Every structure is written in C-alpha cells, then in structure tokens.
Length: 176
Image (cartoon, rainbow, N blue to C red):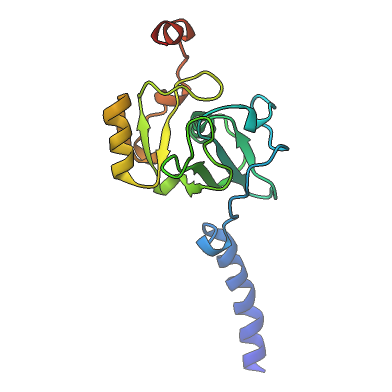
C-alpha cells in the first residue's frame, strides 16, 4: 500500500518537473527543407525567390516553422520585445555549405546558437536590407568578414540595434 501511495504522489511531481524546464535537445524540432510553399513570416513572399541566407524558427505549440526571407528578420523576431510565443529554436543557412549567395541551400541548416555571424558587412539580403551572414565554421566567417567587412559574433553577442534599428535604404543604394 505504501508503494502505491508513493507512486501516486511522486508520478505527478515527475510529470510537472518534466514540463517546467526547457525542451530537451533531443525533443527539439528538426529543420525542414526549404520548398516553394515556404512564405516569409513578415512579407508572405515565396522564400526561394530571394537571394541570401534564410531562417526558420519553431515556436512552442506550432508544428510548422516560421520562415524568414533574411536571417536578419529571424534574429529581429528573436530579439523583439514585442514577439509572441515561446521560441524553441532558430535555424539559419550555413553559408559555408551554400552553392552561392543566389543559392544559399534548401537543407544546410544549423542551429543559430552554434553559428558564427558576420555582422556589419556589405552583404544585402533577399529583402534588400543589410544581412547577418551565418557560418558553421568560424574561420569561414572570418574569411568572409575580411573580404566584405563586418565583425564575427555569436548570436548572443548581436546587439538588438543591429536588427531592430531603422534602415537607410538610400545609403544602401548609393553603396551598390
């Protein structure tokens, strides 16, 4: 009788403890391949029609990812004080595995937490804004920064202003 009572008391506590923490890595949604059906969260445009790296984000309770036409947009959502939903994971294209800027890849996704981002380069993303260029390999990110400018940062180091500040499109046009 004591063992039945112990199970009746302990089992619900184990369930509650399991639900109160972060989602275990093994239970994280995995990235999916980019297809023609993927539309940008902000713009609702077909993602594949835009150049440069992309992002996909999973929110708690949502089976499908939010797609972003630019990595910058995915990080802006992540750093926005007005975001809704619990973010489980953000994936970005590994530009070290990309065929080119025009073909960043459909299945070369890396966890944004492990990526090295080139911030402040002359790279312009698919929506015409300055892009944060992700790499799985730090040396590849540093090589890109040497050629195109910018600074290599980890996700947590990227200041919110880098993705949330207004963009001067006229100055971008002059630099092209």
